[in-house]
Length: 254
Ligand code: 13P
Image (cartoon, rainbow, N blue to C red):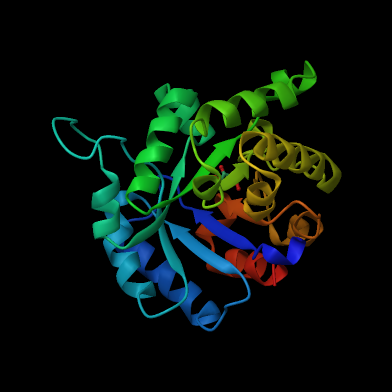
């Protein structure tokens, strides 16, 4: 079953890099990984650098992703970006429901659900982030939180739609802290996520969905995480801003 799922490593550049810096970073990554087809590689620069990064990777197998979008197609939504605008820039993926969006910008599971549906309708592949805070983990609520986020964010999807979604398990306490979940801790939650997905759609769809781990993933810990049976990739923050570190993580996924 596991071989059905190709590993997927995505770099979430967050609010970093000018267009010139983004271009240079993408060029370095392309130089190292141009021929790589054993793992899917996705670069998610800020909106302002989508065009320049898209141009750099256009002749390669590396795919472009965005970090957010609005669920409406167009209209009076100052400051927002639609799924079709992202498709227009040749985005394949879009990160949705990142914990920073939930915490800093009040995104709810219902918002995430609308965005997931709008993304799929526009043939964009959503990377849906879920994960508990340290307080929730310590209170023994990890499974309840992750279940609620999955059931809310993925509500109403058919099995065929669900199979296209990538889920990213990002424990909030591990993001940008240098504190990674142990491979066992991560595997436990990933297996639980797959069980919830099977309940939402079907066992077959759940076996197809790729579940990334995110939270202080680095070359030093990537292999131990990526060899767990239900960890199908990584969503990389800090280390994705350094071509050498990012490429090294991709190599660990091959
Ligand atoms: P770090 O890799 O910097 O911990 O960030 C993870 C993340 O939030 C990716 O979306």
